[in-house]
Amino acid sequence: QSGLMMTHIFVQFGYVLLGVSVLSILMEIFSFKDKNLTFKINFSKFMLSLIILALSLLFVFYFTAYVLEAQSLGEEATKTQEFIKIHGASEVVMKIIMLSQVILFFLNFKTKK
Image 1 (cartoon, rainbow, N blue to C red):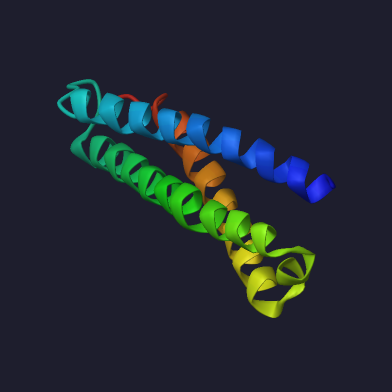
Image 2: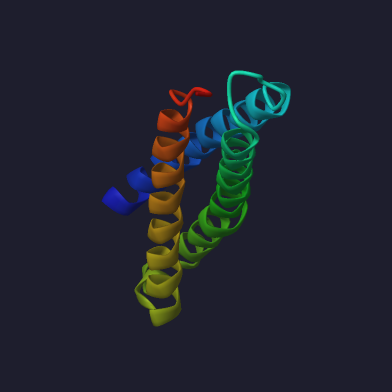
């Protein structure tokens, strides 16, 4: 029962994650020519946003879809080695997204010297 509730939360979270990722990449595209920051910082921010978007798409359309499909097959499908590996990989992807977002946040405080 708790697995089904977590799945519902992650499906809803997926929409928010995609929204934030798209907003982030759009912000970085429009602020790429910011003269207050060096090219390296602007490029780093853009690439981090691109990584966040790519991993968010992977999380929502691959990992979440896989988990939903496995749960629809029954409890036994969620106890296989393949499911455990996919679930572990999704946790790693989420951690990379979070770390990238934190780094992106702090890069916004850098200014040109």
